Length: 176
Image (cartoon, rainbow, N blue to C red; front, top):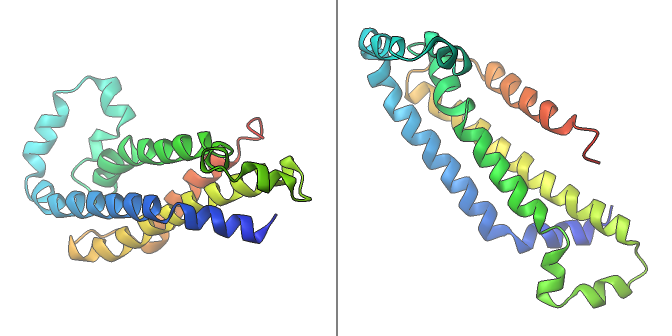
């Protein structure tokens, strides 16, 4: 892996990284600020959840919606956060090689004594690093925000959930 190319890729996307990190922080802040209301009205929320079809309730784990784990699972980890990380991965992954072409630096870069394979591997590693960084931002937001929202979920539980998601994503050997 080429460290200067790795760092250049990260540097080229600092505004995007900051934007996605800010969006994740805002989403976590909103969801954590709503939880005390959900917790205090658990009976009404349970009645609302009972109105959904059984399959829907199982998919989104709505039976546990009033608990901290059920709330986070339903609101964040079922659809919203996976879609955000998929959007980041797809949009940035699609631009692995095209950024240099559009910037007009591809000719200079490919004239250097590095193989195109090494170039692509370095660029992909930088994009995966960005996803890991956003996952770390998410983890810190949950760990720091949980006590404020009176969520009784351990730091280790947050880490396990995020590591499980990462293993699921990065264990796709057929992609490489």
